[in-house]
Amino acid sequence: MAMQPKCSLQAGSRRVVVPTSRPKVKPTHVVRFQTLNGSETGRKRPEYVANRISDPNYVRVLDTTLRDGEQSPGATLTAREKLEIARQLSQLGVDVIEAGFPVSSPADFEAVKQIAIEVGNEVQEDGYVPVICGMGRTVFKDLERTWEAVRHAQRPRVHMVLATSEIHMQHKLHMTRDQVIENAVAACKHLQSMGCYDIEFCAEDASRSDPAFLYEVLGAVIAAGATTLNIPDTVGWSMPHEYSALIAGIKANTKGVDGVVLSTHCHDDLGLATANSLAGVLAGARQIECCVNGIGERAGNASLEQVVMAMALRGEETMGGLWNGIRPVHIYPASRMVSSYSGMIVQPHMAIVGANAFSHESGMHQDGILKHRETYQIMTPESVGLPKDTSIVLGKLSGRKAVSSRLEQLGFGLSAEEVNDVFKRFKALADKKKNVTDDDLMDLVTLDHEECQGLEQEECLGHGQWELGYIQVVHGTMNVPTSAVTLKGPDGVTSVAQGVGTGPVDATFKAIDSLVKLEAQLVDYSAQSLWDGSQAPVTARVAIQPTGALGELAKQLRGGGSVEAKPLQFSGQDLDEDIVVCSARAYLTALNKMIGWVNAVNRKRGAASSSSAGSAGKEEQQQQDKAHMAVR
Ligand SMILES: CC(=O)SCCNC(=O)CCNC(=O)[C@H](O)C(C)(C)COP(=O)(O)OP(=O)(O)OC[C@H]1O[C@@H](n2cnc3c(N)ncnc32)[C@H](O)[C@@H]1OP(=O)(O)O
Ligand SMILES: CC(C)C(=O)C(=O)O
Ligand SMILES: [Mg+2]
Image (cartoon, rainbow, N blue to C red; front, top):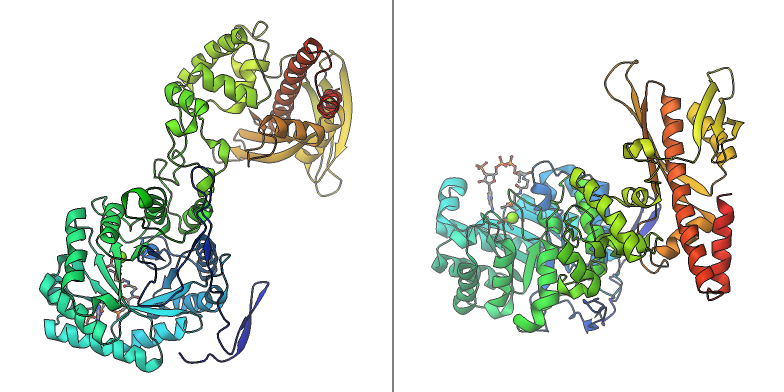
């Protein structure tokens, strides 16, 4: 392969140097994969050779999110987004990154080139450097442009496409069978003449092509130097048994097929892309083309996460030991990134990466999960990069076990009788609300329900805590925003305080803080008018999070920081014509909820420590003491 010229360029804050000769790639590639039990397989990814894979069970993963994925209507990506996704794909451990279609536009050319320069020269955490691939037609100008974009990578590949089905040849290409063969062979030779030897040939619409003709075309491109043969189910027409027979037929009848790698590329028009891809590798293909979140032309491509996890979990047992080099723990971050950059929302029930993929709302399932996770989960959320505490969603179908377990996590160790009492209120609320949040649950425990009888939950919030009296704000361009507030405290005494801030709301929050004195931090604030016009009422929303000793206590209660648990938050919401007034009330609601939580936890812990006389550790006791102090 030709040596590359030395060049260096600045990409964001990263300085990338393209070397004069290709650096040596470490020969050992250890794939670290966390299975359900958290163990690691520690297998070695085979050394990369374009046309052959030394381990007969290894399946290459070609990710085409940046090419076919970007063909999803509306999913256009900027060059920077493509580069960031390519970095994430490299971290994920994909063998081949199909970065784009360089002849399609100058911007795509630049994006692919940049990916080749940066990601195509970075060593992955297991020592592997991914192949960077670009696609073009079998037209010379496409091939030249594509090669020019990818050649900067350590392992550049050109993927060229030419249709082989009658319908495409007649109606789209206006080419005869002979012309197609001639064109494909000439394209291979042209690539080699430029120094490209990693050549993937795609027989577009292969699954609707005449098999005998397909064998002939494929035999001809193998002889002309192609190293990977892509056999796409372009329109998602195949059934798994048909696709399997197609691959088996090619293996049995194509001259020279043992010297190349066969690839699957399946579309999801009938929802069979994953099934067909797996059928293809079971029949002898050794590369799967797929996209993160299964995005792609029309109904999308095979989803990376599905094919990868199917092999990871079932490959040994049901697929004769087929495996791949993906590090599943990076799947979820990749899914989030692709969804956010492409604007293609992941449906909640999507396998592996959907919001509900590891969530359970019904009581019998929640009970099973809490007793032994594997009753209803075939892989752990952590193994694919999700935080652990996403499993239990509380709603009207939930049972006592799930509710009391969540209360336990929130710091309320309730007796069976108390749980029964809360559970009744929980069911009543869940009948009215889709999801019962942690906030709702804490209200069910901390509000004084005797005193609140007859009141709506929102009216009852903050009962017996801090209440807003008056607010007076001075602000404008001539003075420092200043707010004076009066608050009636839990002891019934009204106090006054003043705060200055960056604006009237900030000044008011500062004034409130100086009276309430709670270790908390504002993590979210928004104000939105209900309709257009300056007289429209405003809804203010506030969320706060405990900090300091209270923050530590919350973390401890939610799993001791051993997992990436969602931080405990308290929220408040209020509506008024005056933005400062509704913001102040919303803020007080959140603070009052937090005080209710701290008081309830302290009461519970106080009772527990006096009944187990001195059994609490010194450190835990100190933590509790600090938490007690924090709300005085
Ligand atoms: C199944 C797939 O996913 S295939 C990949 C799809 N991806 C893309 O199309 C990438 C984006 N494409 C583009 O930017 C443009 O279509 C380009 C730059 C490739 C071509 O643009 P244009 O020259 O304006 O052609 P246009 O898109 O209108 O039509 C495609 C032409 O390519 C021809 N063509 C398609 N495949 C081939 C091939 N392998 N060899 C020769 N010609 C081909 C078509 O027959 C048509 O030719 P015609 O103009 O003589 O009828
Ligand atoms: C160009 C090829 C690989 C393709 O996307 C298809 O046939 O679906
Ligand atoms: Mg496709």
